[in-house]
Length: 87
Image 1 (tube, rainbow, N blue to C red):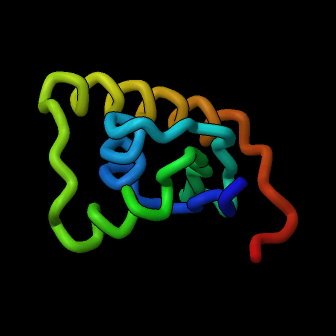
Image 2 (cartoon, rainbow, N blue to C red):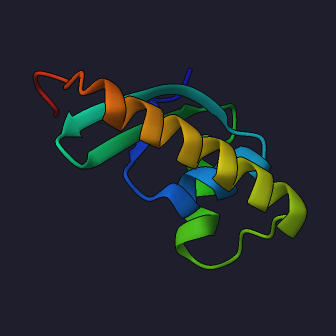
């Protein structure tokens, strides 16, 4: 299994989800920052394609994933359960 991808970039997380990534965790790392953890068979390649501007996604699916992540993010921020350490 590949190492998980961790990002605070909600657009990156939504793009990776649209391309087959799996959301494994949403962590609150300080009072206003949420960390998304994603995994998947091709997660490393997808991340590279995103970084290089070559990752294409369906815009309607992207909007849906973005809304889902935003809801999870605000829910986590309301809970205020911080992760003690972040590597």
